[in-house]
Length: 163
Image (cartoon, rainbow, N blue to C red):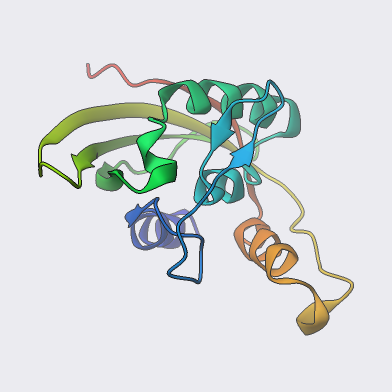
């Protein structure tokens, strides 16, 4: 099951963050608890986090998100380069190391800045929620249920330090 999730992660989180999901419309972003701003894709991804951890994380991510992402002058691309095999650390709880590259591209000048991202995710098995509305649910509800369908919730993210 976890190996399938690694493939899912690589396929679904190699993306640009300038358009609203499912559209070609520029993403104006969504407010965080402390009135920062994150992309809609980031907000969707936060639904896979434990609730209290998600609120903290959104504010931290907002602080790292250049405002040019929301005006379309900066394009942000994230693509994973390595996902480790999961290590079970407790019953129904695993750690997974992820290496990724984040590129910020200035659309006017073509300048690129690349940042290496090395993180360890702690995930736990949870009961996947089921939508009471099924196909009649809104796009947002369907997307959240789709992301949570794997039955995994991220409880912690820390810097990955190679041995």
